[in-house]
View 1 (cartoon, rainbow, N blue to C red):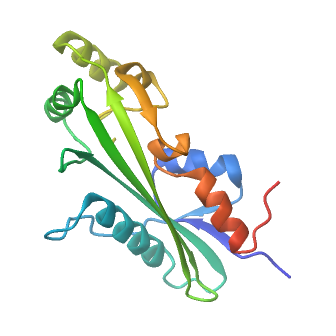
View 2 (view 1 turned 90 degrees about the vertical axis):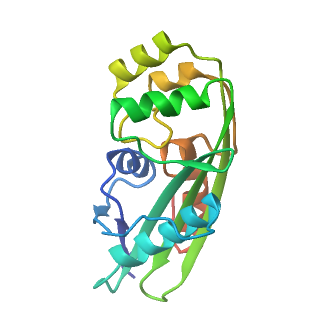
Length: 194
């Protein structure tokens, strides 16, 4: 019996690096999914909807594959913090987060093209920012350039110095792919991990 092809439905280098920890032989496909929010959609529901959509989109045309979709939505008191894209927006996001708690909803979908089944999980991480002054924020942004990261930080790098603490079940979820849950879903789909 041959193993299905493992596909990461993402072009994110962060997610690829994480998946490589579990399973080094995988393909990457761009899902081309519209990531806009729907009216009245909660951040958690948005993350889950997009993870499923990305997995299914990346699975198009594949017959014997397990396709991983993941999405993360950062939330500060109900306000979604998207990827900032600019230094000014990153500065504004980090200023708003200073001394406060930010929630990260990281959703995961493992789509099995053989059965059409979706296995899903949503991780909830609470990040407690310490009080940050304008100089610290400017130096951090200049050094890390976190413009492609929800919430304007990279916790796997210098961003960890911005926090008082992180509350979660899976430290990899904050980087963008919850590996503990993914390992479980892969086992459920018949992939043996060491």
